[in-house]
Image (cartoon, rainbow, N blue to C red; front, side, top):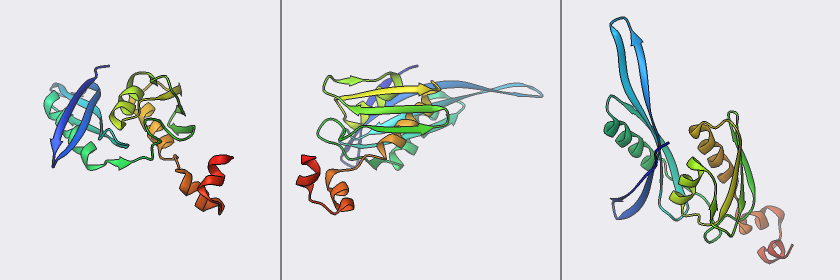
Length: 169
């Protein structure tokens, strides 16, 4: 599992790009084998926006570039509480389950989830994954969990209370 970080300057925005994996894919045809490469990357702005991308091509650099381009187009903002998340959340994708909790001892997460949190700008979080160890499924499950995050103002509006009442409880 290779990880690589790059910062790209795109229209004045500084993006953090992390490569999660590159797989060699072989297609067997009548005349022999056709080799290709599949790249999986995470792109974030370090301030709560994050996206994933997949790309496939005959050469590794082209596959990585396709994946980066896809991820840059799909950036979505997640609500953060400083350098952590506001509350514990659980997400699922396929056979993977991920539980993400606020922390205060740095990023305690394995492999692909660590790359996701670093790209987002989360510096204190605890994450545990269960089930499948497929990096794609793990990251998709984590994104499912992060999409469930709510700000105190959203919760207060839903319950018909003030933010102070929500935070005091």
